[in-house]
Length: 272
Image 1 (cartoon, helix red, strand yellow):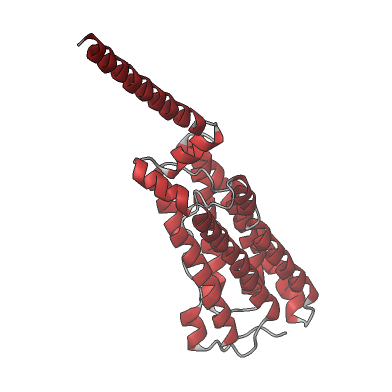
Image 2 (image 1 turned 45 degrees about the vertical axis):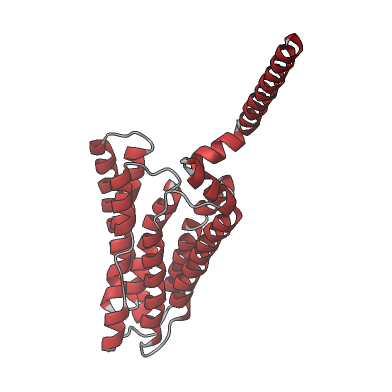
């Protein structure tokens, strides 16, 4: 497969989106990253290295070449937020750690690009194919940790911003279209995006099913003025029976009070 030199204008327009900015803003505003798996964003940062090598060596359109670099940088910013908000690292320590990882990743990517361009220019394509397979595996692996978080919360999505998921899904979708309008459609490159889309659809469906299953609880929380988390916590720790016990005790006291009033009235009538 020879490098694609003449890139159609439509491919340049459709390729590449800034994926993690909504998630970064969401984390910063809440000062909390609970439910957002650190391994997910770290694997995405690692994935960007072979993905970038694969895109640049094959001379994909410019936005698709830039997209892995943006993905790596934004993933490391998000990972630094997790270290700060969840792991309680100092901002300075987390920032230095993220920058150090980014510099090492850039060096590895540059080395692989210079190394693999030589055999690829001579028609030897299996090394870059292996790099593409590695990128696909890491991309898919990065979307597996959220499913463990979903399992812990009965399918509920916490900590992952749905605007981010939508933008990420749209980026994968339009990048697939960008590959489609090039002179040749790269199958492995398309698989990278399709795997991402399928796993993200699973996250959307999981939360949607959770919303359907808990619609009565959410209605109960709205009527009681409590949050859904408070209602779920009461159910989990067995506080609900205490409420029923308290209501039963109040009913019993009321019945006893009524009986006492009736006896008092009866005694007054007998005296008359």
